[in-house]
Amino acid sequence: MSVMREIAYEDIVKNVRDIIVYSASNLPEDALNAMKEAYENEKSPVSKKVLKQLLDNADIASSEARPLCQDTGLAVFFVKVGADVRVVGGLLKDAINEGTEKGYIEGYLRASTCHPFTRANNKDTVGYNLPAIIHFDIVEGDKIDIEYAAKGGGSENVSRARVFPPAAGKQGVIDYVRECISDAGPNPCPPLTVGVGIGGTFEKAAISSKHALFRNIGSVNEDPEMAELEDTIKLELNKLGIGTMGMGGTETVLAVHIEANPCHIASLPVSVNVQCHSSRHTHITI
Amino acid sequence: MSETYHLTTPLSDETILKLKCGDIVYLNGTVYTARDAAHKRLVDLLDAGEELPFDIKGAVIYFVGPTPPKPGDPIGSAGPTTSYRMDSYSPRLIAEGLKGMIGKGKRNKDVTDACQEYKAVYFGATGGAGALLGKQIKSAEIIAYPELGPEAVRKLEVVDFPVTVVNDAYGDDLYKIGRAQYEVK
Image (tube, rainbow over all chains, first blue to last red; front, side, top):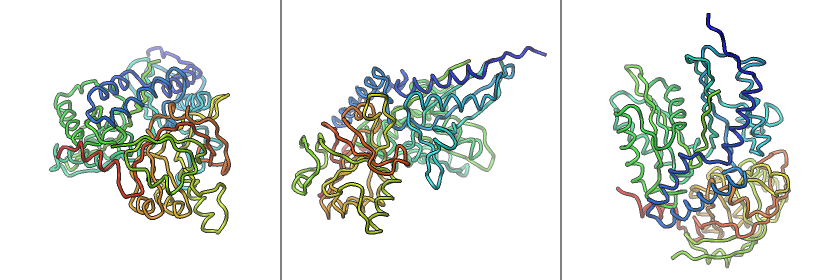
C-alpha cells in the first residue's frame, strides 16, 4: 500500500481564504489582456469609453485592494483530489467552506447567499456567503487541485440549458447559444465569456458549461473540432452588435469555451453558462 | 449628439425633459439605494397608505447592494445591479414622484411608459465598475430595513457620479439604438 500524503485542514482553509480575497480585487491576466484587446478592437466610441472605465476600475481595484464589483459572487470550486492524499484535522469540504467564509468576511466582500423564497440572508444562519458550491473529482496522485471562481448573479441569470433531439446537430447548438446571448443583451455585463456544455446528461452539460468558464481566455481547445466551433460561435455572437454593457458595439464576446462529453443515443444536451467581463477565476495546487 | 450635464438631486420635470438617451450625466447630491427586497417593502407601504422612509418627490434610486466598507471608508464597492428585477415595482414609485433610477440592463414597457407619462429617466451606470463608482460616494447611511444587509435602504451622498441616460422621457432606448448601429444581419 502506498503512503498517503497528509495535508493539514488549516492549510486548506488558509489557501482558500487567500485566493478568495486576492481574486475579488485582482482581475486575472487572461481576462485583463482580453479586455485590453477588446478596447483596441472596439469600433463604437461609446463602448470604447465604457471599456476604458472598466480598465480604470481594474487598476483602482488592484492598487487599492477594493472589490472589482460589488457582486463578489457565490464561491464556486472545482476540486480534484488525488487518491494518495488525505486531509488531517477535518473534512476537505468543511475546510473549503471555512476558508470561503473567512475570505468573504476578512476581505470585506458581500454576503450574497439567501433562502430561495424568504430571501433572508444566510450570513447569520448558514454562514457568511455559505454554502460554497463545490464540485469534487477523484484523480491519480497526491495533490489537491483547486479551481476557484467568484460567480456573479447577473450573468448567471441569463444562463440556460436544454436537451435537444440529436437531429439539432451543430447548427442547433450555434442557434441556441446565439438566441441566449441575443435575448440577454446588456443584462449579463458584456463583453462576455460564454461557456457551452455539450453532451453528457442534463446536469453534466450544465456542470461542463460552468467548468468551461474556468479555462483561461485566449487558450485553444485541445479538440480541433471544438476549437473550430468555438471560433464559429464567437464570430456569430459578435455580429449581434450588443457591445460593452449593451451600449452597441463590435466586441460582445471575449471568448467561447466548449466542453463536450459523450451522450445518450437519444439526446443532445446543451447548456450555456455566461460569465461577465469581471472573470474572477484562479487555480492552485496544494 | 450626446450632451454632458452636471445635475444635483432632487430632479425637476424641467430637468428631466432636457435629458435625451445617450446623454452623459454627472450626478451630485442625495441618492437612495434599493434592490428587489426593499422595493417590495416600499410598494407594500404605499399599498397600506403609509409613508415611505424618504421623500420620493424628485428622488433618484440606485439599484445597488454594496460590499461592506473597509474601516474608514463610507462604503465598499458599489456598482449597479441588473434592473429588470425592479420592473414590477418601479412604475408605482414613478407615479409617486420618483424621477430617476440608476441600474444596468433592460427595462420593460411598463417602466418606459411610466417614464413618459410621469416624466422620469432611467440611467445606466457601468456594471462591474464597483471600485471606481464606490469612490464617488462620499457618505452612506442606512435609513430603513437594516435586516436586509446589503439590500437595506441607504441614503448616499454622491459627487460627480457618472451615468448615461438609457431611457428618456420621450420613449427612446439607448440599448436599442446602440445595438442597431452595430448589428450584422
